[in-house]
Figure 1 (cartoon, rainbow, N blue to C red):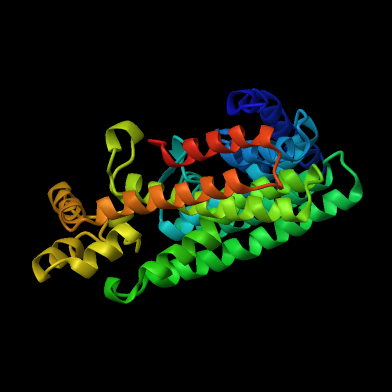
Figure 2: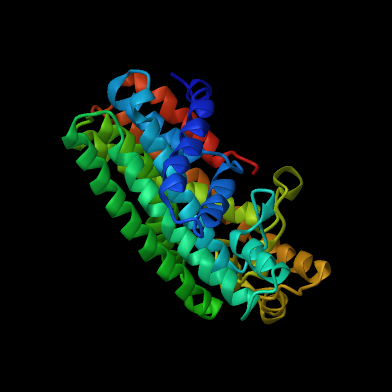
Amino acid sequence: MNLAQLYGYLPDLERSLRSSYRPERRTAPNAVRPYLDVNEEFTLRGGKRFRAVLVLAGYHIATGRAPRPALPAAAALEHFQSWMLIHDDIIDHSEERRGGPTVHRGLAASHRRERLGGSSEDYGAGIGITLGDLEEPFTVEGLLASPVPPARRLRALAEYVRMTRLTAYGQLLDIRNGTLEPSSVTEADVLNVHRLKSAMYTVACPLRIGAGLGGLSVPGLEDLEVIGTDLGVAFQLRDDVLGAGFDSQASGKTANDLSEGKRTLLVVRAWASADDSDRGRLARVLGNPQATPEDVERARDVLRRTGSLEYSERRIAELTAKALRRLDQSRRLRPSAKPLLREVADRLVRRTS
């Protein structure tokens, strides 16, 4: 089975997501239902659904069979993703997500239209945080609905608990790093955030949840974790490159990460080797949403000239190669499953969006 075949399950996944809100909407208080509709609309806007696909991949890797029994768990990961994105957008003061307004901005706009009391911004953030939290029960329900033996469901739930905790640790450290001077944030600090946050909930844990539902052995799950963690860090480093506006024509991204002040590997490496003049160019843009396009381009030029962009590309290649070596050497993963994981690796690190 390849990625294209796994993506063939997306229509079923979308139906599962849509149907997950219906019973709750029927039983929820009338005043709550419009808020559930906000969550449903946001979740069904789309997205790459890559985490869900990796749950399906994990099940197939474990069993060699069609991954339909893992569809509820795949939908669960999309509920988890909605939870994370809603909260991330509040933290980052983001305006748009998935082709529309972020949840908290949309709620703030509704507050203004309805002329409700209090601050529209506070209302949007407060309701947004709560709606993000409301996605967790849908996540747990999806994992519990997986039609596999109870012991495997418990394994998936345990992995979910671990994923949630590690993601929160990574988010805490990411926010903290953003308050520090770039000179005091190290490469190890950046990569630690990427391991705890992006690598776990984007790659390693979705694979392990699906494989656990399929009954993969503990040693096999350990191999998946090592492979998935390296690929997950490489994935986030690629995201940082795109988020700094490189390959922006292909990705549609701009240099938002710079104006948001994110302490990415690009920034940390450039700051360490830049002279005072180039540090000034970076400082004018970091954390400054009002930075001019000219200032942003000067900052991006610093990332190029200091070799920081080249270094990030090299680290992406090294981590990918390391993951593929572990895959090739693994005796715990079925040989027939390895081409799928190689395809996953290629999709993660060679993407342009």
